[in-house]
Length: 503
Image (tube, rainbow, N blue to C red; front, top):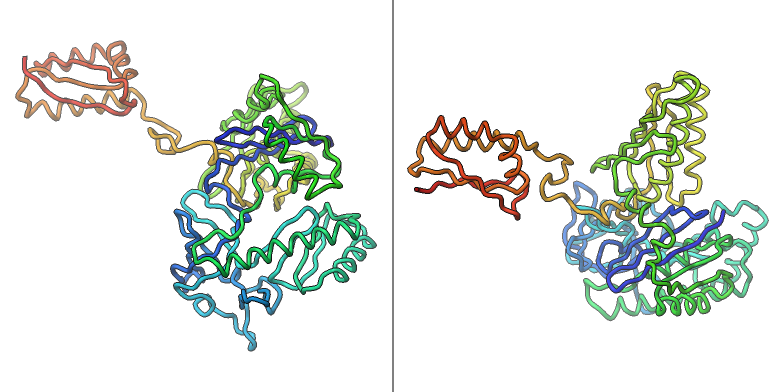
């Protein structure tokens, strides 16, 4: 599969698109705010401990307090001059004491305490960032875990001989019992490359500890790489061929980063300097706009509807304009299969996480249902986020979960509608006009003036003059009062103002 990265850089925003065979599959947006702070490390101060929730709120310097669960609090955290902080039990379980008793959070944390934490989930909506005291520093080939004594290897490295070689290699090279995890890119790594990356990660950790001892909470100790460099580190694999960027300073920075951090990476970096915007040149803007809409049409004529709520995301499959060629069962089956390709692409591109309910068109043929389910599982194998897909129910529903670590594309690029406030509906013009009539009748009883002055939006003024003129005339005749309608450009559809005046 041909992969490439397309990077668009402006003063206000950086966008990175991952393309597979020319199709956008992931989009990352960075705007210099707190919308994506995954991986950042802070010196925080405990604000409040909640025994009933076995969690705590921690001030790390953001608008919203971060929160931490008890099983993300290591039993002991030493940031001494010569002692590295790592867990005595070496895992992330709910820390037991020497008697096997599970230690509650009120015995691990106290209000006002300063602790080193790392963001594992950026703030989403009204939820603050989720944090942990188990620090990890990712590199190109390794992830350093200074708090645990553990060696792990990516499951995607299948060869047992290679896994044994890597485990022996890291055991020989590490001088301090820090934990390490080999990433997939570490397969086949040479001894010199490994030593260079280990030294780089350990030096980063030493600098973080120095800043921890030098500054008071809240303070950011370490900021993860920018979105461009994270994409290079995490997304460019051995089969990646090209990175194209439209900013000269960014182009030079990328080349310097690759030369210093990943000199063995063989990838072509191109500077895009044409007048046409880079995302338009790669035909990406239309795909991004399409990813913000609820309804997505399929090539066959069917469509899917994606509804995101606080609790879950529902995806409904419909035949739409597709009528098939042979029989109804085949039409449904082909629509479901095509929908799967679009669903997996849209879930990745929109970065939809949490609970996802897929409502396929019901199929009578059990073999077809099984093929649809297997195709669905296969389509998500390229997804880097962890997914869990449950078997299809008798009515064609599939329940799945996808790990959520950052905001979805919709939450990142959109905001709540100021008229419907997220409901997705606005009151109809007919309903608004009836509300206006009721208000007129209510005020008519106590009215001293001769004329009603009605201020409405331009849209409603046009509707009342065009479609409701007979009703307005009838009310004027019944009340013996004239109604003057004034369009106000700044009014939204549901807004109106009723006053009175004398002749």
